[in-house]
Image (cartoon, rainbow, N blue to C red; front, side, top):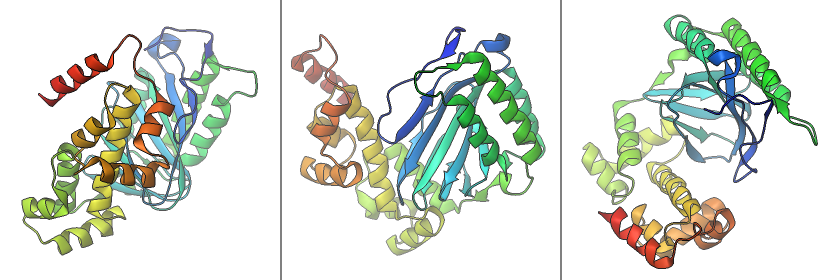
Length: 305
């Protein structure tokens, strides 16, 4: 966590679909409560993306417009405004845009957040039927005007207001989410764990011991897209992460993410991202300072081991 300061500065310039990114010191109020980040993301229809895990804290996810499916572990939460849901920061989450949706993600840290969400999990659950209203209010408080910065005090006060509002909107029903069928849950596990090695949907269906038709039908029903499309999206998200590092060639990224060849990788990447992999890598990040192409090749050989 960052040490306490007088203001909250943007974590980074907007990149990709990120609109807002604000950080506040986690130690504010002696560790009781802080906002580590507050972000807005836009998901196009059918777009899937995972949320990075953190060692501590709680994430609040709320669609501000449009519909989404939030997958948290074995739970599937169909969500629309003004709903919100919370999950431990270390829990693996992914979001599917059912239609074009703007989604807020707020990361809270501190003992107050642990206490409140711990109680919610034991009682009403971590689903909040009107929680999105409180999330929008907090985002407004955390978004500074031109030439201004958000003070740490304001961030923590906004986080406190959010906690109190969520406690008033918790509901016992949808908080448990819709349980995914075993075949869909198993397919998601294989896709996220072995996306680099899967030889298409035929192998996925074979390993799950079901027909391709049944797998596609079940997956589409609960996830809103086909397993093949979902697999490609997971591969592209991981490819984007590797390309942003500036450490790997496009060919290496294509192989490491499970694409059959670099031409197919480039076509899928352009369809998803709007530019080819090389353009994306140059736009996002250059090769780390001091690292030669020979050193990068050596890194790639180690990665393959």
